[in-house]
Image 1 (cartoon, rainbow, N blue to C red):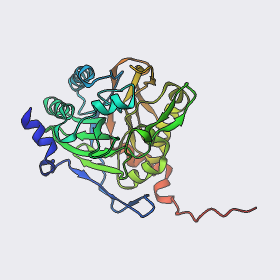
Image 2: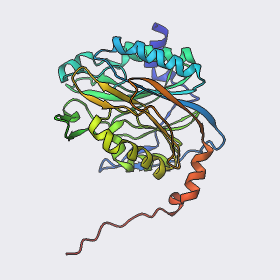
Image 3: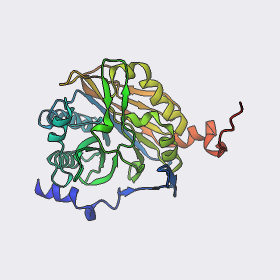
Length: 321
């Protein structure tokens, strides 16, 4: 275990083959600006799985579930496996959440997941883990992309905080618990160009447009959608992001009633660039769905609707009264 932990916390040992490549810098207004585009993988084919389960209130309870499902996915031939947001636990209150958050440099959960990716020789999208922010009273909701060597290829901090009252009797204020991220992240890997995001980010299409313009082919949107918002918007949003960008969307999902009574929607999805739902986990409390992916479909879809070539830079809105 010590060897694996050293590998994932020493950034000088990140993989050269599937390393983090960040193509954005922050403008003064905190909006992302594209600085570079990468070559797309026109002939790559792969099998991908998205997991669905109900995370317990502790990582020790949830990690065995993850290990079981990843092993089963790999046995079915998946080379890319995706976990949902808050992959290892969903905690009932702010203090419990902070108490269970881990320090990245010594995170046992991250080390265990790196070993899992290496054991099964898969790329593993760890939807998000809750990490302590040094010197702050908030956590960081951080997604990781791990490669088959058990090393970190990329990480991404959730940008958009879910502050909303959705009509399920609860008020959500993620900004009170989490320190937001600022940088969009695209990872160029051996299985394709992967754009990272987390859950509520999906409601902000400009993020995904930027990732697509940078060369993304696979968009991961790990989620813990509420049952109310999921029933209303989940499938529409997933298909819209796929269609708009011409990318495959892979959305692992939480499902069920959690320790704090929160209900999540499920329906882990894989959506093709033309908007077809390739796989839907439905209302299964533990499982996964798998689909064959041909990255040639990305450029084909983009050519068919032509938006990449025809997009115009708009002037500011003129208001007439």
